[in-house]
Image 1 (tube, rainbow, N blue to C red):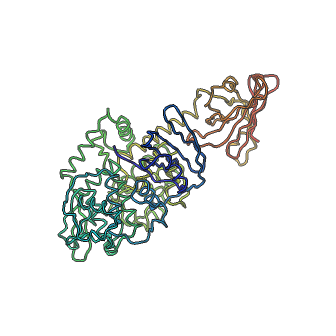
Image 2: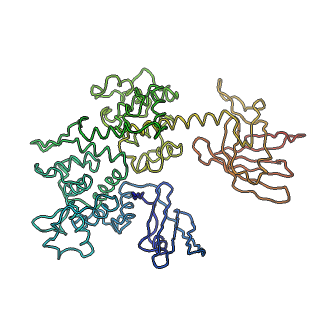
Image 3: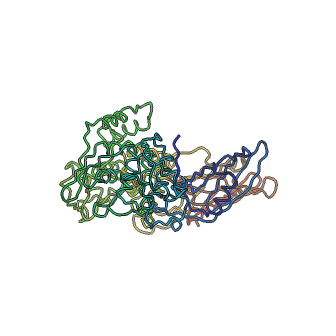
Length: 602
């Protein structure tokens, strides 16, 4: 079984200690950064009691302890809420939750201190266990002559990393207090990922590890700044980036393919050049076989997504194997996809003028596939995918966050708030609300996007788009309130040619639904727009006299946008109020009839 832990929301050490003491050292902490929920489960070995606690930041939640038939309850409250996370904060929270460090605060962790070799041993040995790498003994020469200098608490970890052959000694010594360098750290992580030692006869010796570490995305440093001592801050990032790959099957396969085919050449200038992977390699063939092995029966959604893309000119391929779902997407390929996608749904087409803005006159278009240059310029005109310094970088890969950002900009017709850290936060939340991405996507949002994900993201948007249009055009089950179309009255025309805003109308109300105590979810339609309503409470005053309250949700995003209430007496609605965003609508009876009512925008 693979253990997966997500980065934590902020929570005080005192609260964690209270909840942790309800179990013991066997407890597991599972932290969900999207819902900001921390769940602690474990077995008290002395009593056999199983305890499960769920704590949501900023609220009070109940935990339950059960022994036989006896149930005890209690509450734990925390008020610490943090909604913006840097990569380091995510890394530290993951390390803390998985016992790579006993510190959960940057100051306690000493983030800017240099890392010693014995401190690295604990982190790497624990990461080895958490990520379920092979535990076979590979090296027996671990009786170091300087063992007396080891921190006794770290001796076991040093033995483990030596036995796995990921951290070696020299001349019979481990050198526990020696500072670890960036090349050494990269060598350790690449050895751990590959399960073997790379070619070390080059000059510098770490060349192969550097090339592979950069290919994996563990570092972005150039060679001139690489050969220095590593900080505790940097090792946290390196390990966190590696676990992101190790915990994602697709990313792991892609990364293995990259490393298998990489050939590093160290030139006399000290620069390093990477060759393009050869498709004929053994691992490449295995990789392709995996893609081809996915059948329609195993993944009907992907098959239909590819067929839909083919039918609409988004791809020339018809089958999963031809489509090569595990390959990454380049920026020039994405330009074509977004340009055609925009035409299908008529997004941002008004921006495709014949005038080419200066920022869209890219200097590197000669490097692009010439059949794609128009698409590149179009997506730039639509302001959904741009380059920098008049460079589009057509052959480079597109990350998942860049793809989702471009998609949401296209759908919304504008940029969202990009002032948060990371800058894609608002785009991710929007895509999550739309059901295009899931919570797990946040962990790999900085990684290159695969063609598999592209197909599913676009197809899911298409499905959601169709469903929303249907909801706003057809009658739904459990409709509480319907506008009578011919009764709609509007305000004064503001400008010539502008459609006046609807102000009031007659409506039908299904009072049977409102009176049904088991009725929880329904829909209302006001001036041709439908909303979802979820019951919150019913307050009874006299027999058959009550007020029913509900929350109003936007159907497309499922976000709460307002409230509604109905005052009911003797099976008839006396009055109602709907408050949607900044608008208020009052509902009143029509004289001499209970068949329909009147709604007016205040």
